[in-house]
Image 1: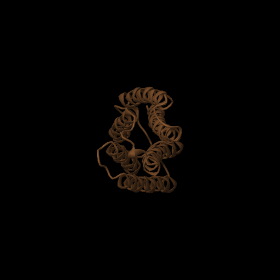
Image 2: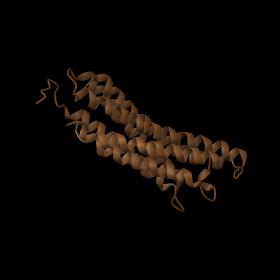
Image 3: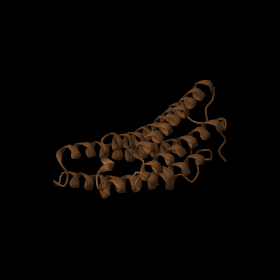
Image 4: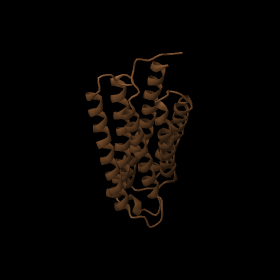
Length: 208
């Protein structure tokens, strides 16, 4: 049986879980943008509120690291995981803000592939939120990072098909430029979820 001198400091795990739960809130808000008659400004404002909450969680995490003598696992991994969870939220907020500021939701409809990417992000967020509490025991995490990788590949396919549509002549040049920026943020969010999963895998391997 493995014995560890590291403490079981619950605060770190709680903060990771809170940050991941905020990502679920963020992706749910993005999916609201597909609803008919949605108040886009309200969605964008609420995304900003969730992002600010995530920033506070990240600051609390950093403060906890700096005030804790012995951490549950390597400090650099705690910093990395906290920062990467925050990065995902930044990309989600950017998507909502750009859709609102560019007036893209006033189009007859957003490209199907954009909704597919938002759905992938929603799945990634829920799986990530389910995985964070498992860090305490470092068990049952392998399925998480495998599924996140699969979803990231699915997101890549949707992103490529979205680019094909954008440059097919269906939209005017200015709309293409606007939607390409949103598409890039959606794809970056998918990648950011994978970075989180990769860090969790690294931590699990170190601690096994």
